[in-house]
Amino acid sequence: MRRAVYPGSFDPITFGHVDLVRRAAVMFDEVVVAVADNPNKKVLFTHDERRDMAVDALKDIPNSRVIVFRGLLANLVEQEDCCAIIRGMRAVSDFEYEFQMALMNRKLSPKAETVFLVPSLRYVYLSSNTIKEVAKHDGKIDDLVPEIVLKHLKEKFGHK
Image 1 (tube, rainbow, N blue to C red):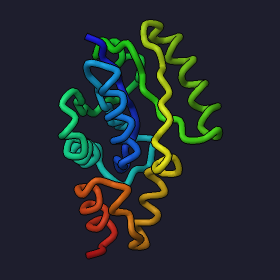
Image 2: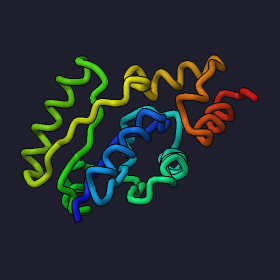
Image 3: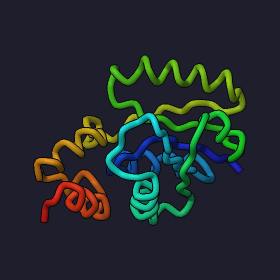
């Protein structure tokens, strides 16, 4: 089985993330969406909330599976027997960080290749941080995030 892992904080998951999972799911037998539980990162949603939103957002992609993980991605790659790490590349500004991470992951887990996917043009500018900022000010984001995410953001920021 050709299994890929798509790691991230997914705080929250957006249609850009869903787009990448959908396209990766065509390339691999299974895509493990790994919601990172990093205690050093300030997040809006708990890891359980992020996992639950991702499960709901990806429910129509049958060969995707959502998990929460802690620790090194290379260890998760080994545990899940993955042959690839999926990473989204939105802009040139993402390149340096992603390139360094890909090289380190190759060193730690040489059997897994990093596969960079460029989001669909309609999502290329989209980030979870942008979504949170717009949602905080009650801006229109219903075409950028799954319904479950919209509901949770409205609750977090006290909007109706």
